[in-house]
Image 1 (cartoon, helix red, strand yellow):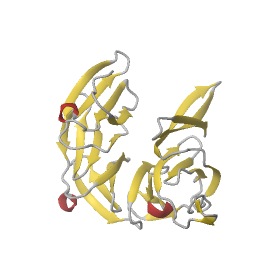
Image 2 (tube, one colour):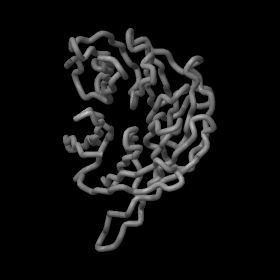
Image 3 (cartoon, helix red, strand yellow):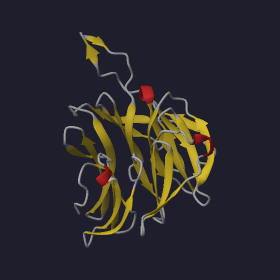
Image 4 (cartoon, helix red, strand yellow):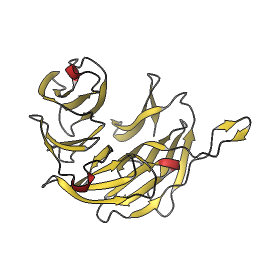
Length: 268
């Protein structure tokens, strides 16, 4: 599976299937492509030309479609044929969308200037948008009990109801690791990546100072820090969980990828 000529912007597995989606970084006009692959046969089953840089993609819970976002666009795709349709953005046509997640009945996307947008999956149109209590938003994930988890500037992590789009909880700010000339740097790092572990009901977060935290968010009224580390020598760009069945017990692992060409795996 090596049809891309340059860097790959994002990759995503299609739930409960043998398909995987890969999208070019759009360095060259010759490689502005979206591919759908069959992992068993290692053959390309669909391809589509893209005209704008895609920053993130998310797959629907029932795997019937996937959604891509970028500057000024949100697109719905049929993965079996790679046919894309533009969502109606209404007053968000100039929105710089940076991340997306498919919820229970709707799709949710965030913009870099701190807006949360809810899209109707049937009509493929913007249903509602709100201003988040953060200057910038960087990442969004689906949580537990139909909640959304959003990471933003100055260490902000918000837990938001999918239905009402109201903030129902927020996490504590990270400890300030950075020092300059022996003094603490009081600039709180941004939360740049998140992943939610459905087995352990824990949330992992990565910050712009390369720190890594794990939180217990089972009880939103009593959020606790489980662990914190500072073992990455450079910035991390993504974070996810991997689930495996071993000796009749489901185990989960946290995987991070970094800008210095390193992938790190640790027990959740």
